[in-house]
Image 1 (cartoon, rainbow, N blue to C red):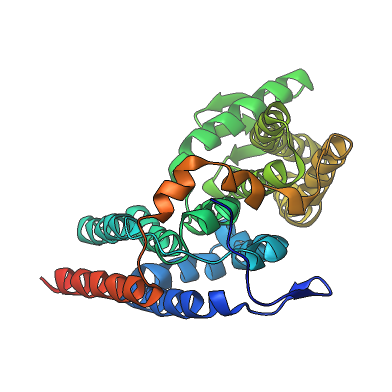
Image 2: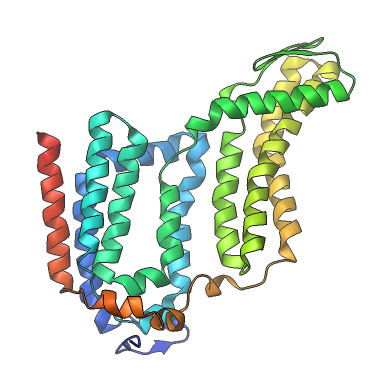
Length: 334
């Protein structure tokens, strides 16, 4: 089934809001407001983590990146007309149920995943399958809005310590290790949570997903780049820890630690990112706006036409989502 044409034309690369989009976008806005209101506690906790915890400070940029990804598909979106997909309501209900369960169990990660998932499911419900497939990358990328990574801090601490002690022995500095404690002639070094490299790793994985799916068309290149975005930060953090220990033998542990925090925070991370992107640059094989599936490709899939038969009015979709949000709010009071 061919995509429906929008009634307004695209001028100078920026489309006016087509008439076919006005009601669906208004409905989506109303649905989002209801969902955010009922999951406000989770969104408040996420905003606190983004703004106040260094590990997640890069997440403040994610809404802007998602908006940029959507804008890249602006011309193709302008040629489509949203067709609300009523089975998406089941996904909205499931996401709200996940959020409710997370709140009841006191598991923030689960509650926050449900809060984000409800907004994603609302897009599928109100804008439809065809539009959602075209925007699959920004919809999926929204998963990174959920702060995660604390769970991997302990293994990263031990891994960093193992790399650091191996390099310390290799460089001729006598040392012994006891878990995350490294004893050297210059003093005792502890691979604390802040030194685990989790902030570096999470930020690199987020950047890696963005680059892999906007600049690489080949699956093998994507996988190799994503693997590099995991392996390189871990190894680099181990090298950083070793460098701190090695330098401390000359200038003292306290001075070396202070220098390390400045260099790692402002210079080391930037150097590693630049080297990784610079090394991958020559292998980029497509422009960002070509990411994902095109509208023409999606139009050839029979399953899309069958899914679009399960439609309803945008206003009805929004009202159904608001009703589900109301049920979730009542369940939270019980």
